[in-house]
Amino acid sequence: MALIVENVKKFYNDHLVLKGINLTVQPHEFICVLGSSGGGKSTLLNLIAGFIKPDEGVIKVNGSFVTKPSKERGVVFQDHALYPWFTVLENIAFGPIVQGMPKKKALEKALRYIELIGLSDYANHYPEQLSGGMKQRVGIARALAGEPEILLMDEPFGALDMFTRENMRTELIRIWKEVKPTIIFITHDLAEAVYLADRVIVMKNGMIATELEIHLPRPRNYRDPAFSILMENLEEHFVS
Amino acid sequence: MKNMAARQEAVSVYTKKVDKVRNKKYLHAIPIISFFVLWEVITRLNINFSIVNPVFFPPPSLIFLNGVELFHSGLITDSIVSSTIRIVIGFAIGVFLGVIAALLIGRVEKIEFWFMPVFNMIGPIPALALLPLFIIWFGIGEIPKIILIAWTTFFPVMTNTFDGIKSVHSSYIRSALSLGANDRQIFKKIIIPSTLPNIFTGCQISLGLAFSALVVSEMMGAKSGLGYIIVDARNYMKILNMYVAIILIGIEYSLFSLLLKVIEKKLLKWRTGGFENAVEK
Image (cartoon, rainbow over all chains, first blue to last red; front, side, top):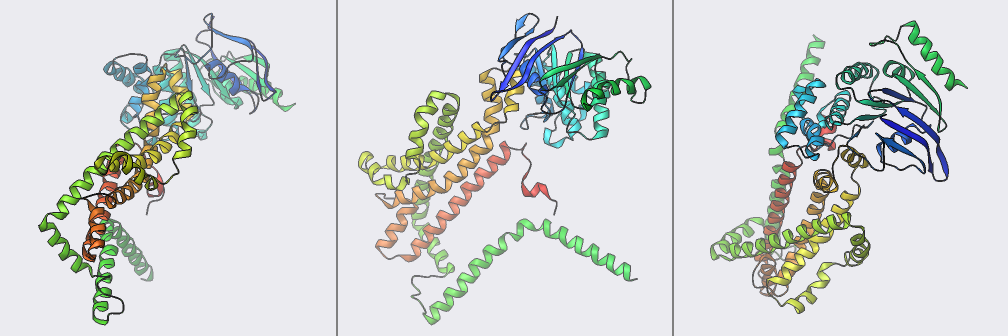
């Protein structure tokens, strides 16, 4: 049992944005939470991260309650949130260093993660000097270097162009297969959800509208007829 | 043929532009030099035609010669040394206390509750109005001058630093928390570096105010310093000395301001932005 969300409700200014969410996520599972904007998916992610607190219900990770942010739940932000005063290497080493690892070891570890994302040549660059896709890869590496059990990703590829986004999806699957964290990935892109997830959670009006398990073998192909059928299945929930 | 000519012209316009950029630094001196030349010409003409009393408007060459003379008498060195000591000590104390105060106010809500309204009330009072009071309290030595300079420095540094602390990106703090950082680490590694640009803004604003405080404090109850030269010159109608002191104050301020900018550039080398980096010229 990795993550359990039990009957979670959340109000914003007397407006119920999450109307009782129940969700169980297994270790190493890749979950995509799909929904249109304003559907409450970012709220759910912020709750799981511990940035905000539920008004009703509980969230548990490995049996203990989530009350505040913790290193077991790493977060990748849409705006990447890299620290502009640190180099790429220092950004990635941030997690290990604040967790008490000696600086030299932490930097060595960061180097391994830079290799994982294929940016070894940019270790000493500042984030400002990187392209959008590179920044987001550094954001993923920084979150992973903190060795979280669960990786929470809030529309991480939303601000990238189409081609970069495709590359990032392939990259993410490769990284996930290598490191195997549990991933909860927020998106509003149907194809992205079907391409990435083991299971797609469709959110509508603050509720889980439906769940869909995806058994297609990886790497998945957008032109595969089975892929199209799954997309059509999901699409039906948004037309009504 | 016509095409060729047009292209050549385009090339020469382009290379001219490049030259212009390369010589930019050296070009900066031209307006300054022109200013002094114009001043010299006008005041020299005035000496000949006496449109206004030439004693009040001396040409820069005479001011320079007078400056050399004062330098040989030792007055200038003494004055610069004592003014510099005052501004350095007062400014440093003001910046230090301003940053510390802002960090404490930003960190502990109770301190913000008790101190912020008081600072907001006292802050806008022109520090110069307080000088006579400081002289009564602390006498006419160095202490009231340094306190006045520190006082004027304190408020802009404190308010700017505090603004910086309040406007730290919340996703920086969120990501640091999710990576396992504690409050102290977030303060040291996130809040302080992201506030550094605001601290420097505060310092630049304070520097100008600190120089006013310096000059005024040297005009009241001082026996040395650039401000003292000015009052002394007024008392004995030594107009040339006055100009020398005014120019030296300008130069000293510019040097300090430059020093701050150099330090800022060193510490904030990660920072890109501004018009310079927005568009290539």
